Image (cartoon, rainbow, N blue to C red; front, side):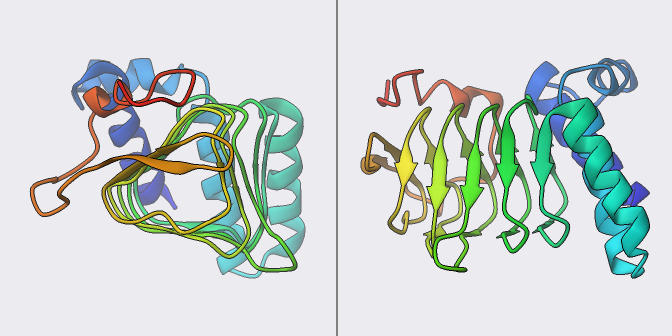
Length: 192
């Protein structure tokens, strides 16, 4: 658990401050969303060890103190970053890869018991909704307030209701998500 949380905080420090130095990591520990990341990893750890009552407690602490609801079986790889945690709701069966960056008011939910699957290196803008049995390809960007109900190809930037591809990038040249990539999507969900 601690290794995953440290990687999450390091990725958030790079996102927020452009560095994973000790001072950037300390600053990151005090930013919005970091506490929710900790409670999520504690809940995930207790679920893996079948400590269900403990995972339920961690889940409630996250919901009450951080206003972030992440289902107890939700599973994300290293580098799961809640940039802002308020209003985030993630279904219990969601699966996500490495380096998933989530803004506030995001919903990742089920439709008819089928949930999204997120690949690696994904940015999800504020207020975005990802609903149902969709796959989000690696190096994708989901614009603010977008409603995703269909698969998103690798390297795509999507926005709108329902979400449509606004930009397609060559993923063979992309190596990871950076803070500059956030500027690709404006608050209206349109590519800049």
